[in-house]
Image 1 (cartoon, rainbow, N blue to C red):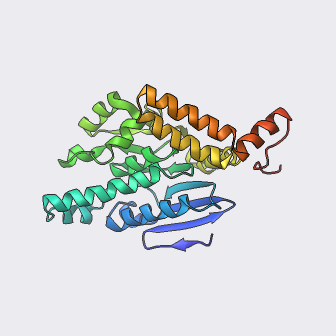
Image 2 (image 1 turned 120 degrees about the vertical axis):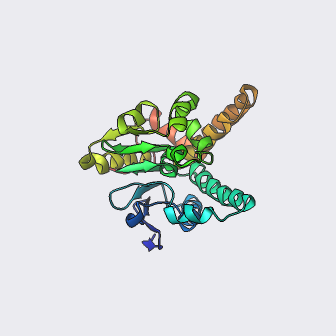
Length: 265
């Protein structure tokens, strides 16, 4: 894929890895209507691209994402209730597009991830943060609430931590973010790209169809009763075991060789 530069995003791909780079450093990569629309379209497009094995989401400048753009928020003061609902629904659909993207999504987080920026971290499959990153669900400090991101954040950190952090709006460090499950790994800023690269190399050794199916299964099981999940999981493993890549992967393991999709050393 050739490199693409929108006014708010930079997108490129090489070796099966797509880079989605928030590109508004002058406003801490904050959300506005354009960012929301472009992110949704980018992840829908990359999710459907057979040449993309994984996606890395990052931010330009000193901050991953500082939340909502002040000018965008100011504009919301003039919106009717119905217009506010439509605005929020578009943002929810953007988070959903990332959350349900069939490709694994890695968040490369640094500086700060506040409000909707913390929501972005929550919808990524793997989140790696520099040890100086500050997080926060800070909406209550502004008299609003983290409503749109709540389904995704609750799935990541659980009710107990959400109650403590949503209500206070307090900021917290990367170590606490890892403790509550919002991020998976905390490293020095100088090591963050190495950590991202290590995860990407692991992804490349796994079956692409199995990854997509596993991600879909997680979402389906989470939303299901036990009886429903039993059927979902039974059919999921049966379908993958009998697929071409499932057969190849198991045969490669039994034959003590690399699977066909694994890169040569």
